[in-house]
Image 1 (cartoon, protein in one colour):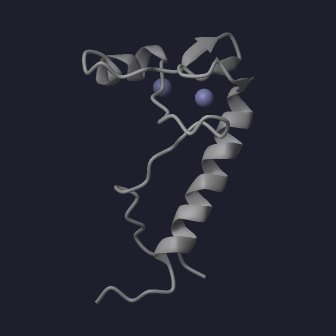
Image 2 (cartoon, helix red, strand yellow):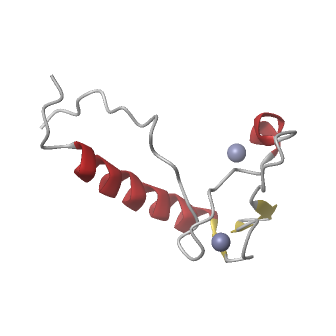
Image 3 (cartoon, protein in one colour):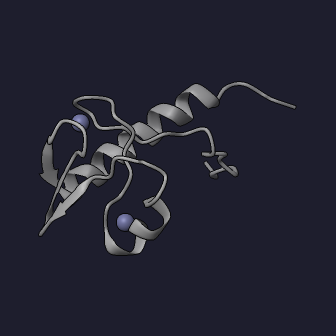
Length: 83
Ligand SMILES: [Zn+2]
Ligand SMILES: [Zn+2]
């Protein structure tokens, strides 16, 4: 199965615990996520904490969580022909 162009523009990655929208707080993302009053995740070594509830997981666990959320999002987008 080939991946079609997935439109992830409507996808929001959220904290699995509190549902707060995830904004990466790493140095390269900070400049994009700064200045808009956004609550950023807090990087602490290999761990990342949710900026809302403090939920802490390893970076890998966050990536796994994001992958699951993208899959779930795709499932809601798939199956429907929009054209
Ligand atoms: Zn949270
Ligand atoms: Zn980042």
